[in-house]
Length: 209
Length: 194
Image 1: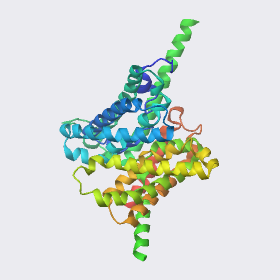
Image 2 (image 1 turned 90 degrees about the horizontal axis):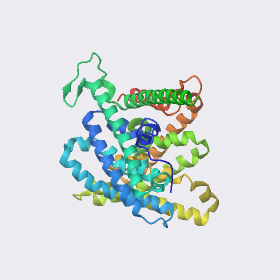
Image 3 (image 1 turned 180 degrees about the vertical axis):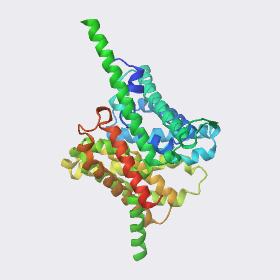
Image 4 (image 1 turned 135 degrees about the vertical axis):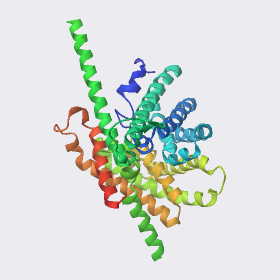
């Protein structure tokens, strides 16, 4: 068992899977073109990840890794069915169909297929969920940020509310703009993170000195 | 025979250029970043992607043909696709372990990255939406793998420049790579008139 402390901000900021490592940036670039679409992606991603982790954890560790990883992915696909049925009650069917490709990809997300073995399963059950919640929250916040920004910049609207700004980029919902926007946001995110970290370290060394 | 070949070629070209998994659909970005970072595994990872997309596409063609009329087909689609990908993955690993133990030792560390990723699953889903004959399924699967290799090569070629000192420290690595992919994607979109 890992004895390193579990901090929510690790997953949200330090190891954010969209803006820091880019581990699951693809669906955000492809699907989060509006606020509603990003909300649907977050909903499916969060439920599929959290529920699958519990099932995957129950699998015997005696099974060899090659087989285990197939079972993890299969467990996620089974969880995907009720999650999509639930999503169908909340979101309009057209919206879900338009991002179906990216919703399906949530079953092969790196939190289920790689972080389980390298991180989550090394901790007790409750701490695993606390740690995973940080990563899921990190994804959700980044996804909503990208979706909102693209929504505002494309149509000067967010969730059908007009935002009065003097800038419109109609191509912002295109794939290439998604890549560029996520790249710029990731750079800014890292810049702010390193700046704040350096300030904190300086303050700590002053206190110690 | 000519028709089969032309269908295969058309589907492959579609997968390589017009519907490139990485540039047009943002699929498998994590694999591209991983492969560009660990250069020694580059060929192995892309060979794995090409192999799995091609072989899985062939099986998916039969599943689509016989089960696509089923009411719950869309819900069970990911399960069936992962089942096929998993079967291909395990059978191949078993064959490698039995007949080529040296190769098995080499690939076992990263083969799962090449097999279980968004590019493979996404390619199968897109092909399923497009439909077509057996030749177009296999052609598209192969084309997607080659298109992914092309994207990987473009990243590999620019990797040193993207990590050079001339790039601001915060943008070095993943952020500038995303912007770079975005620029290539923009160029491709303009080229195809999308």
